[in-house]
Amino acid sequence: MTPLRLAVVGAGSLRGREILRLLDERQLEVAEVRLLGSHRTAGSEVGEGRFAGRIGLLEPSAFAGVDVAFFAAGPSVASDYAAHAVRAGAAVIECSSRYRLDRTVPLVVPEVNAEALAGWRERGIVAMPSAAAIALSVVLARLAELAELRRVVVATYHGIAGAGQRAMYRLSQEAGALLRGEGSWAPRSRRRLAFNVIPQLGAIEPGGASAHETAIVEEVRRVLGMQELPMLVTAVRVPAFFGVGLALSVETEAPVDPGDAVAALRPAPGIIVHEDPAIPYATLADVVGTGATHVGRLRRDPSAEHGLALWLAIDSIGKGAALNAVQVAEVLVRDWL
Image (cartoon, rainbow, N blue to C red; front, side):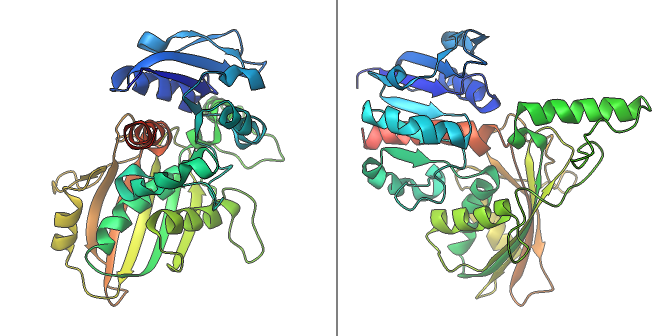
């Protein structure tokens, strides 16, 4: 195939820089990468290896001749510019929340539902699930091969990186101020991030669930193709910079032995099972820079008829965003472009 011409929108963001690093490491044949950003970032230098360069200004004409456009900025940028990229002939791989719940746009985790890419041309866009939904999807898909899923309950623990670089700066400033005895650096209108745990991501909706909790449920159902799967999610912000941890309880229609669950998860693409009794799990800090969902502390859940309990951890910027996007591009180029 002719080497690809790519664009990375939001090239200066955490996700954008990680996409560039991965493109430098992996096997896509690339002729050009256009680095695009807002008026605030245009002109600054960014990039890794072969794809270091100066960020150009994002504008509708920037996508001429582009084969694949990675959108690593926020949902408003995707709303304003994704259609321009599609009209220019690019396949859009979109990492924000903008299209995750749009039924006309495939929502893809390559290890689980790569076949959903068959419908990408309807809108010209492929959406990426959130990091928590990616981790849940790869694990639940393998457990569902052993027995039908009856109910899923999960608490998700999100580091600050998912909220962007400004939130990371705010966490560091708050922590420094508190450690220096200067009191909270946080504005009074906001919950303190440093040395705190906040059980809310997104607005609280009627019924009591947050917007992010509702979205995780719908994303997992979409990726698994299980629209009626009973799920309860509690999403929590924790004062770590990177990573997402998940305390997962799964109830199945038939009994599943923990040993059989480990045997099913161990060879699965995109999963690392921690079985050493001395180190039975990975923390959020441990998974930074890794490209898998880490599974540990797998055991029976005695509170359910056929229950399993697991701990999961995933790098929210790596596999939870950038790597999933690059893997989707690889499958799209191989099978559908």
